[in-house]
Structure formats: C-alpha cells, structure tokens
Length: 291
Ligand code: MN
Image 1 (cartoon, helix red, strand yellow):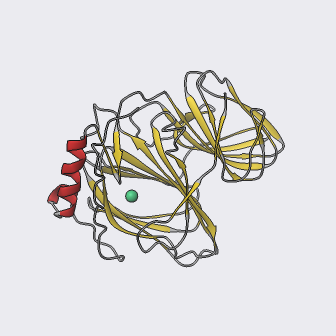
Image 2: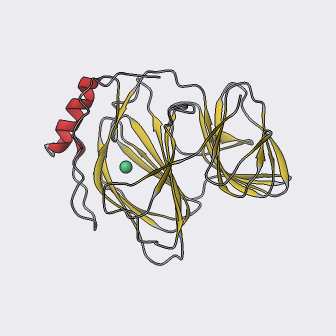
Image 3: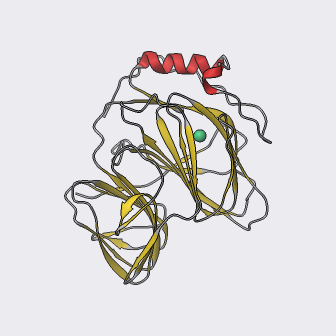
C-alpha cells in the first residue's frame, strides 16, 4: 500500500531564514532503505538565505543535491567545495565531523534537497571523509531523463561511495514512463515540479510517495521533476537525535557533551560564516533505539 507523506515545515534555529520542508523522518515512515532524513528548501529568490554555522554529525552520510543556486561547503577535515546544480556533495561523518553551509548570491533562485543516510554498524565509526561528484552518470528512456547521483539505476552507477545498497536519482519525466525498480527495495519519490500520477496515486508538488518492497516498476504520468530514493530495507535499530546517529542513549549524551565542550573529536571548521551551533538540551527521557 502506497503511503503519501506531506512535508512538515521546519524553522532552523540558525541564521537560515528560509523554511525547510521535511518529509523524513515522519510519524508513519521512519526511513526508506538507509535514507533516514529528507529536507527540501526553495525554490526561493532569497538566494543568500541558507546559512548554517558549524555543527557536528556522527554515524551518517549527508547527501546534498541542488536544483538551483550555489552553496559553499566547509568541513573540519579541510574540505572547501562550492556545489552547483547537477553536482553531488557527499560527506561521510563516521565517528565525527563538523561542517558549515552558506548559500551564495549570484544565481536567481535557490532550491535544494539534503538527505542523510544511516551508516551500518560495521562502518559507523570510520574516519570521516568528503566526496564531490561533478558529473554523475545519466541515462534516458522514452519519456525520461535521469541523473543517478547515488548507487545504480538504469544500467549506470554513481562513483559516490555508500555503504548499503541504495539509489538516489533526479528524474525528469515528459509524458509518461515506466521505469523498472528493484523489487527487493523500498523506494520514495518526492515531487519537485508538476502534479504527476505515480503508481496510480495523484501527487502534488512537495509530496513524497513511499513504495514498499514488492513494487517492480515506477509508473509516472505527467510532466514532472522528481527525486527518487530507495534501498534495501535497513533493519538496524538506531538512535537519531539532533545531528547525531548512534545506537544507545549513552552514546548520544557523550556526543552532545563532546561537541559542546569543543572537543577535538569533531575538529575545527574554518569558514566565512563564523561561530558554531551548540547542541540543545536533551529530552528528559531515555532515547531508545528504534527501527
Ligand atoms: Mn549538517
């Protein structure tokens, strides 16, 4: 049974002025494969409105895929990367990293998604790394042009390094298309532009449709721009709090204290934003691992 998820509007507590539309996690849908977080912002003419000062991550990869605008990424392992539409930034937090992001003036519009992928137990404490893919592979079918920035689809494979079977792709549909998908995987499709019919369901802009395992094809009718994510069901219980992914409440408490003490675990970010974002107070309950 397909599930349709409307985004929640989230105000970031930093200098970012624009609203974030969050489709994952959701009360009825925690994750899609190892994709655990999906934020979408813009399109907006306020092109310098995305400014997020240094903050940490653990146990996950951040996936940044812009549709319009320019964003400057800096991190505590020395990466300095301007990202533009059609390009991927993939940051592997592993045991700990810090980064900042700042959108730049110049383009007429700013529009992007940022997602998180949970790292499996075997690699979640790995050394942090950063990868930029300037030209991810593409393929075309009748009625479809696709850019595959994560994993494999349509016979092409992104060079980006991920640690569980996944796909992430931008799809431009003209008319209609039937695209075979991996039957053993879960998938989600976020509507970026248009109001297409997807696997029999009418979708509107900013809605996400979840397709559980067992679906063999993505059937889209109606001119549209879509974000496709999917992967093998990820069945490790995780604790996700603020910008951290761990396995126990104790680990989260330690990560929070370590960041707020400006411990070397997370390193220093040198950027034009300045400052850093302290972790908020923990809730007054034990955080429990969940699937
Ligand atoms: Mn971040």
